[in-house]
Image (tube, rainbow, N blue to C red; front, side, top):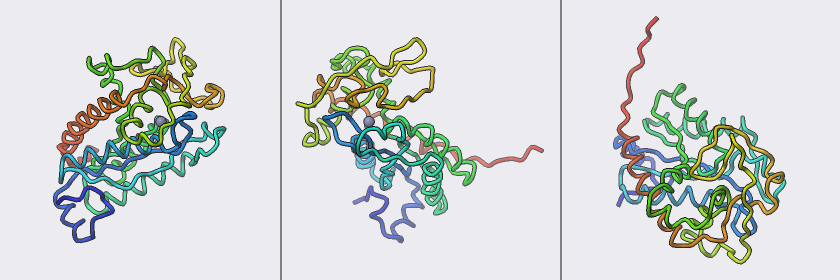
Length: 268
Ligand SMILES: [Zn+2]
């Protein structure tokens, strides 16, 4: 049986795996407040589950690395329990992990981000790995895949919250957690806190993207830590979101694996 967890291989098995060239998935999450009803490791649980289920369904084509559990989170430090890693430290750390993978001969590495604020770090890390090792390294946020996913007719019909309902500790994350780890969801404590982030150039409701990059201190825009409406989340919506996300992600990983490693040419 094909192993899907990078760290569970022996070194001779790793040598065989390198020859097969699976896509290496590096989940990248965080530990931060997710309202009074969800645990601090919500992002970690969701991104890890997406990566593991993807690798499980395409044996031999992907290996999942241990999760980078801490992220860019200084702006959440007013909420008890959040862990903040300084941005340059974090970037260096992600690059070091990814570069180690490249040094062993793997050619396709995907940083799979599960925490919105990690996105610029994941992007820069992938760029540095490409420039420094010449492998194919990219970054993707499968939660951002929520955007096209939510536009799909079945899912958009299942969505129960109105505008502003899906942003953070919201209908999406709560539904995913109800499906993946229901024992960690305290629905009786879920609160609706909505509409803090809507301006003409800035919007944080999925699936509408925002033109403005801006991240305020979280305690200035949310009383409960919630931004959205978790109270309407259902396990059925979570299951549908998860299944669609994994289906889409499998297609993405397979396509990513086909990106050729082309030679550079000095045109001086
Ligand atoms: Zn989250």
